[in-house]
Image 1 (tube, rainbow, N blue to C red):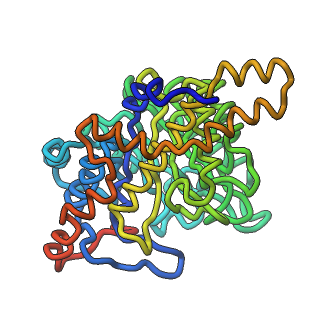
Image 2 (image 1 turned 90 degrees about the vertical axis):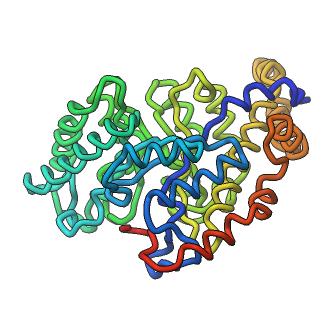
Length: 389
């Protein structure tokens, strides 16, 4: 047994999934970044493309920026451009992993001058936040070492804590510092923020406005990600998601592509723990690279995958589940979850979208819009945006 779709329709309307500006640029692997026709050449064109996803899905009202990739002369102009296109500017992401100075680290570097350079970059990001009205400063660090003995592990944690404290002191009362973790790459012996526990320890020392970002691709194989989701929600420290999929490592593929059941399980724990909806501060965002597929359809498919698994998670008969759990009915409890997971919600979602003035099939609607052909014809010349642009 599952709930009826009508029982969850209102809750679906609460969903918002932030798009990453960099997903619309060229990206790839360590070996090659492939260009594609129609790729944006500046942040304004990225925003225009992101707006197409919101137009056909109604799921993505904001766009995250990456600094310095999305530096512009006027953020008021960029915000106005976003507003004119029906979206808003969202999370500001810092970048301390591409300058030569950061080869041996940034916020955890042994050289105080390098650490200050990285801190100053985050101060500039906070300035951008103040200009755009953004709430979250999201920090992912490539900091770590490749060889045992290369650096003092404890010293690096101490230096990281000091650097984060300097940044945290600068953020506003209505802003948050969101610290992401990743268990390896590009550092291979150790990463300075490798797991949720390290991120939790660092942000807990900072204060209430510092929280953890969970990237679904940033875990060792076999990790029970939904357990981490539960624990961070329980502790009040889950700030945001970076949704993507991985088969082997940090593959940054379309969310739900590798393991839809995992995405379902994660979203069930999000809903169970109060991390979903208008009353929650947990931000949903995509963090993906579209290397061989077209970028706008890739983002449309991604937000639809999250919506579909959210609908299935909302359909779980929680009363029946609780009763089976209390009774020690192992297979009965598992069956309640599986009934919801195997429910095909796509026809009901199509009808629900149409009732809200949206296309029943956003992928088909975008393909028929002519926008892809238009940008491929118009965006000739200039430098396409991509890693480092």
